Image 1 (tube, helix red, strand yellow):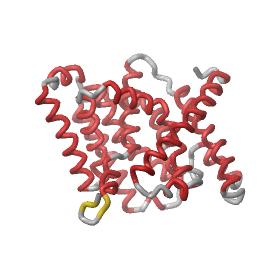
Image 2 (cartoon, one colour):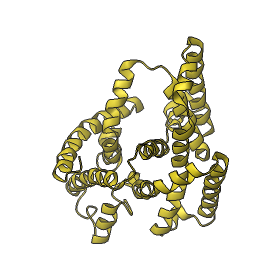
Image 3 (cartoon, helix red, strand yellow):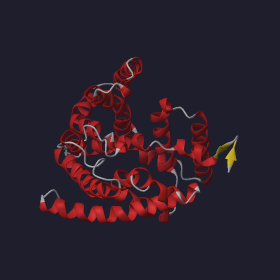
Length: 299
C-alpha cells in the first residue's frame, strides 16, 4: 500500500515513539510506587541492569562468532562503557538506559517538588528546562558533539519532560471518573475514531517535537477504550517480555542477522518474524534473569 508514493508502513512507523512511551509510563508507575511508600529505586535499577547485562553477555558472545572479535567485544574502555550503559556502542537502541537510571534515582526529588507546587508553576519549570536544554542542544549539536558526559546530561533533561508528564498524569488524572463517563456506545466510538485520527495526524505531520504530547493523548484515549479480553491478555504477555525484547531486537534486525530478517521483504512479515524471534528469545533471557535475581536475592 502506498500513499503519495510512500509505503503505508513508512507512515505507521511514525505513530510509535517507544522511548517516549517507556519514560511516560515510568514516570506514572514510579510516582504511584512513591505514593505507596516504595521510594528506594536502587534495587529496581540493579534488576534492570542485571537483565541488560544478560543480553549483553549473550549477544556480544554471539556477535564475536557471527561478525568476529574485531567488532566484539572491543577494548577495555568500550566494554566498560557498555556495561555501565554510559555509551551503548554494542546496541545503540539502549541509549536511554543511563539517563533513565539518573531519572529513576532522582525521581523522589521531582515527586516532592511537584507535590509542593501548584501544577502550572511546576509545568512552567519543566518546560523551561526542556526548552533551554533543546536550545543548547541545537546550537551546539550535542547529539553529535562526541562528549558523552554532555550528551548524557542533554538526554536526561530531554527525557525529563515525558517523565514529568507521566507523573503528573498519575497525580491528577482521575481514571475511574473518566471511565464511568465513557461507557456509552457513542462515547466508545468517539474514542476509537479520535485515536485513529490522532495516529493519522501525527504520522502525517511527522514532527517528533510534539511526540510527548502525542504519547500523552494516545495513552489517555487507549486506556479509556473498552478492549476485548484477548487483546489485554496479549498485551500483558508482551509487556512481561517487552524489556528483553527491546534490548535484543536490533541484534536480530540490524547488527547480526539483518539479511535474514529483511529477506522476508514484506513489512508485515518482517515485523511478525522479528516479534516472534525476539519473543522466544526473551523467554530464555527472562528465565536466566529469574535465576540470577534469585541467586542475588533481588526477588
